[in-house]
Length: 229
Image (cartoon, rainbow, N blue to C red):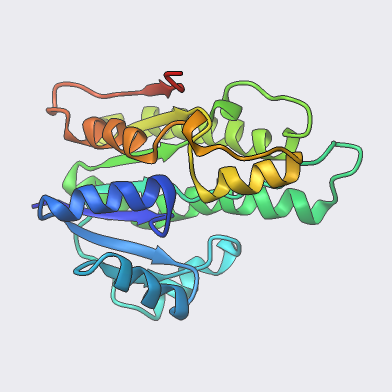
């Protein structure tokens, strides 16, 4: 039985991954931004443990975890949570930049740092759910894409640094996925949302589970998932 720490398990891809892993009997630790959200996650995924820490304030994660009981073993750390705020570079404020960079890049880096000791002992796996925006940037997506380009750099560096410790590192780059984030994006773009046009979160969850289930003689470095229609 493996133990997985997951961010973003409340909806979309993260919720789909959490369901898959719980159904097969794995142990889950789900990160929640506050106590209220922790109760919601516990109700959504019965049997999972919760850990409280705000990804929007990565400077406080270490302090928050010091007040709680942490898992002794972690076999995989799954960074799924993310936020987006579209806008032209000429209009985005520092607040909008910090909002996305903190949650999408700095917090995953800090979480990884804090749990590397457990991951090294378990010869575990770190999965970064990136985005197509982590490979190319379009108009209005500057801050979000910058955070995701940075996430790719984080994963690539971590992979080289931890290879000798037996820690595997994977980046998954989904295209547009039917999720609450996609609903928000369409609202910001002023477009009508049609979930049938996008990737089902379950399909992305399949690729993530495949990556962490690979035998030890193989490692998925970068996996791009695009809509099939």
